[in-house]
Length: 406
Image (cartoon, rainbow, N blue to C red; front, side, top):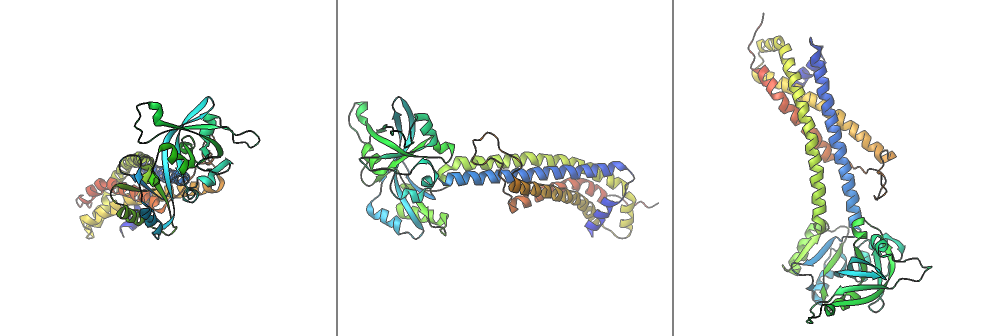
């Protein structure tokens, strides 16, 4: 009933044309704000999925690292215990350290990651080879798979038509007692077998080789690791898997899921997303002032109607609900129009790639979008809530009007 009155008041011709103008301006501003909110949230969702896909090619589902220090010991029985868990598909031991990579006079600081044969099943690096092949060699003849940024920085040749570069890897040794700084460093020779291209952060930072070579250069014990990376089975629950491993391995180790391995990135992305949402919500708050003006003028015009309704037995609460419904109606119309436009633009962007990304440094050459149902509900709820709040004061004034029939 209340929305029926509100709809009739909305459609009815007003004595003052300004009421109609302000009402439509209010709807337009709400539509614009909800359109921007949903579209921006959809673009952020698209970029978030894009980043997650690229990072998932490098980060494992579960990673076990020491709580303190750079390495830890895992006994054969502990490794076997990890292997026996029903949710574990593959796991790989890792020995990782910052190293100096030299190619003649060219040199580059890299994060050298020594891994075993299972690493190609745990990580997507092997599937991201852009030049050469994924081959890590042996302890005596190690091979290196480097990021594309490292290849360019160190001038590494991967083309089979030319002689492969002899690369020097300088690593710190562990547990050295010599006072000579040079004795605390190890030097090994290797060649590059392939180049991977995943994401700039990884491409400029990491090089991968076999774990036995790295362990020997760093004086690691046979059962000593920097990390253990795990690939879960498709139906495994990451949260439960993490808890199970933590209980099995003890409190001296940290068990991280994929997102905890790079918390700062995902936290920053979420903060940016909701900061933009909050800024765009300010547009809705500005629209609320237009709504207050429109409804206040409508209340003044409908004074006789209010008195007639009161004479027929309408209570103050009924009058209040009628004009609150008028505000909600304006918010509802505006949000429906804005959301519909955002969905239309998102669909067009997905289908025809209308808006390109310039610069050529991205994984895709167009703005990615992904519309989520919860975002639609949030945007609609925000618009209607602000409209309801804005309508409260004019509706309250209308409900307190005294009966005046002349």
